[in-house]
Each structure stands twice: as structure tokens, then as C-alpha cells.
Length: 339
Image 1: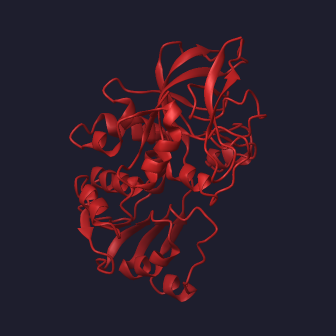
Image 2: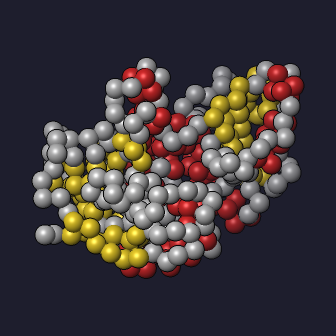
């Protein structure tokens, strides 16, 4: 029996365990078997390894990746194609999928990199050399001009930003991005792409602000937020930035929260602060397939932006623990793992 190499996560504070899992001998209708060519380490996986986010144990983490189709039981997806895929597998039948335009909140949702080994074949995450994609997962060809390093983070970070910034206020000439991690960098580039004239970016790290400036962001030191902006996007994960975001908005402005995806986000905020300014506040989590498609198209038409600089040289799968240490150092926006 043929097997895949996998890195098992057995709990916070424990090293990854290099192991194997059987490859499926046959595929069910709609399934696609992919050999992963490059995966990247998302901040949410770092949170899981540090115990700030729960995960079934044991499991294979990882959800940002690119790979080549090995076998397919789905029309339109062929062996040899270089592809990426949606973070979530959705049923396509429930109310979130059909009526609410929120397939990422499917009543039968499955998320790659968040599933136990006994769920299906166990080939459920990207820190492995193969992954089995389920029938409700959207599989998308990667444009030829995009390297694996540029394309891999699109199926989480970039697609989430496309979702968060899908609806802009009218007019939207000035925006503030709170946070200059990968989400914030993508946001600066996307907002400039959408025609926003001034895109300010704030962060506690001068080094990260310098990178954001390469993607259209105007660096702003903490505590020096511009005033009367049309849009504020929170991607820091820190509730402490919310009062500053409210203060920066013009009357009728929009505030989008996309980073506070953890319980330690209690807000120091009054309803009056929102009501008197007639603000629109929107929370965003993950994305729908259309957002990933738009993100890939954006990358393929943005060769002038230095996206290659955001991802580290790849480490082999055997050195995944080292990859997580490098992620903690914040030297790179994404650390790459190559099976």
C-alpha cells in the first residue's frame, strides 16, 4: 500500500511527529488527491501550537498550500494540474450555502488543517506530501505566472482580505489598516487596486510598516492615526485598537473587523460611539470561493508588487518544528514548507 508522509500535531508544546498515512486506492465521486508542492505556515496554526486555539489531537495542521493533482474523480479537474483550493468544504445545500451567501459557515462545514486523523482518510492538512480534497471543496487552477510561494497564502490570508473589503463605503478615498502583518499588507495592496487614494497603515513594528509601504501603505506610527477616514480595517487581533479605529472614522464610515478571531477580544466600546457617528461595523471570518478566485486573479495581474519577498526560502517537511520557530521570529510574513 502506498503511503503519504505527514507531520502529526499531538498537542501544544510538543514537537511534530513525522509519520505516514495510507493513500486512498480509489476515490469517491468528487474527490481530488493532490500532491502538495509547497505549504505556508499561517498565524492561526502558530496559535494552535501555542495552545491559544484548540484542535483535535492528533491531526495534521496546515491549510495554505499549492499542489499538483495526482488523481481526480471530479469533472473539470485533471491529473497534472497545479491547483489550490478553498480552506473549507461546504455541503452546498444548507441555508448558509444557498440563501445567506456564507458557505464558509456551512452547517456541515469541514476545514482543512482542523480535523482529526480519524475523520476520513486523515489526509486533512497541508503539513504532508498529499491531501485529499472533498467533493464540496472548490479546486482552482493556479495561473502559470504565479510561483508556489506567491500563490500558497492566497487560499487563506488574501481570500479573507478580499472578502473583508468586498463592500466599500461610498465614497472611499481614505482608509486605515490596523496591522501590517500579511493580512494588512494584502489589504494595502488590495485597497490601492480598488482605487482608494490614501491607504494608511499602523503597526507597533517599524519593520512591518516598511514592508507595507512597498504595497501602497502609508506608514503611521502607533497613536498617530489619521482622522475622518472612510474605512478602517482591523487585522491586528487586538481589541485594544478598536477605540482608535472608531475615532479615526468619519461620520457614516465603515469599520471591518477581520483579525479578532479568538476569545480574548472583549471590547471597551460604547454603543453611543457607534450610533452618534452613524457607523457601519462588519465582522468577517474566512471567505467564499469567489473571494479566492478574485485573489488569484489579482496576484496574476500584479507583477509589479514584490509578493515573492514575503515568503521564506522553503524548509523540508522534516524541519517543520524549525519552520514554526522561524515563524515566531517574525522575520518573514510566511514561512514555506516543501514536502
